Amino acid sequence: MLTYSFENIGRTPLYAHLYRCIRHDIETGVLQPGEKLPSKRALARHLGISTITVEGAYGQLMAEGYCTSQPKRGVYVSSEITRAAVAWPKMEAGEDAVTDENSATACRSTAPPEGEPSHPLIDFAARSASSETFPFSIWTKHLRRVVADDADALLERSPGQGVLALRQAIAEHLRRFRGLAVEPAQIVVGAGTEYLYTLLVQFFGRGRRFCVENPGYGRIRRIYESLGATCLCASLDGAGVRPQELLESGAQIVHISPSHHFPTGLIMPISRRYELLGWATGAPDRYIIEDDYDSEFRLTGRPIPTLMGIDALGRVLYMNTFSKSLTPTIRISYLVLPQALVQPFRERLGFYSCTVSNFEQYTLARFIAEGDFERHIHRMRTLYRKRRETILTLLRKSPFAEHIEILEQGSGLHFLVRFEGAGSDETIEKKLAGQGIRMKPLASYYAETTLPPKEAAGTFVLDYSAVDEEKMAEAVERMGKALYS
Image (cartoon, rainbow, N blue to C red; front, side):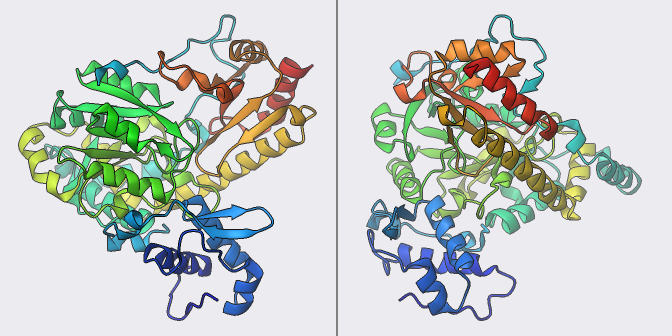
C-alpha cells in the first residue's frame, strides 16, 4: 500500500500533496507502467484522509496522462509512461506548480454562411470576454496612482523587452501559479501574441521551418507565412502532435498548446510531452513554442503543469496573453525565453522599442503585484464555471440530448458538440444561423488540403465565454428548433 507523510506540508491542499507524491513515484520508477493503484476508498482509509482527497489526486494524474482509469477495474499507471520520460531531467520549479514545404498549406477559414446576421443573437464563436467582466474601477484606480507616482517613468523610453516592473510582476505570477522559476530578463512583453510571432520569425530566421497543429488556430499559421517563413501543419492523434510526423516533415520549430488545445480541447499527456522534448533535443536547431493561452481557466482539477516546467535543457519558449484573462483589447502578451536564448535575442532584436505603452505596462504591473489580477481570475473562474455548468446541464437535459455528444475535458472556455443526424456541417451552420446562433464546425479548423477525419463531421466548437447565462436556455431551445424540430 502506498504510504506518504502529510506532515509539514504547510498550506498545500491535501489532494495536491498526494498527487505530487504519486507523480514522483511514477517518474522515479517506484510505480511501474501498468501497475494498479489502490482503490480510492482503500488508500483513503490507509492514509487517514477523505476519499474526495484521493479522488482529486487521481483525477489530476489522469488529466495529465500519468494514469488511466479502466471501468470497473480501477486506476492504473499509464502504459505510455516510458523510461525515456522518467529519465528526462526535471526542473525543481515544476514541483511547486499548483500547478517540407509540400505540407505548407493555409488553415481553412470559413466565411459566415449566407443569410447569417452580422451580429448574431447568440455567438458561440466569439472567443472574447464581455465588457461587463472587466474590472474598470480597479484598473482606473491603479492608472491614477501610476500617473501620480510614476510620472517621470511614464515618459521614459521603455526597454525593448518591456518595463522591469511588469516583467518582475509576470515572473512572480508565473512562479506562484504556473510553477515556473524564471527571471525578468527572460521575459519579452509585446502588444499581442501576433507581434510576438513576428519577433520569433525574425529571431530564428525565415529559413527555419515552423510547424503548427492541424486542426488549429489558423491565424498563427497565416502570420508565419505572411512573414516569409515556411509553415507546415502536423496532424494530431489522441495525445497531441505526432512526434514521428514532426521528424519526417523536417520541421525545426513547433508551435503547440499542450495544456488545452484549440479547437479540440485536448490535454497533452505527460508521455507525449516527453516525446516532444526528446524530438526537440534530437537536433541543435529544434525548439518548441508552448502557447498557454487560457491556462488560467482550467475549471476542474489543478492547472496542468507547463511543458517549460519539465524542460531542463532549454528547448521550450513559453507564451501567454492577458487577452483571455482580462480583455482582448488590452493587447498585452508575453514571451519567456530559455536562459540560453536571452543574450542572442537581445543582440539580434534589442534595438526594438516595446510596443505596449508605459501607461498600460505600469498599470498592469500594479494590478498583478497588488493581488487584483489573482482576485479577478478567481471571480472569472467562478463566472465561467457557472456558465459552463449551465450550458452543459441545458444541453444534457434538452429534448434532443440523445442526438448529441459533448466532448470536453473541463479546461478552457470551449468544448465540442457533435450533432447526430442533423445534416452536413454546412447545413447545420446555416440552420443555426437562421436561428441567430453562430457556431463554427471543427472541420473549418483543418488545413485546406487536408481532408478532415470522418469523426469531425457534425462536430462544432462551442465557446461560451461571451454568452450571457440568461441567454443560454434560449440558445439551446433555438438549437433544437433549428436542427431537430
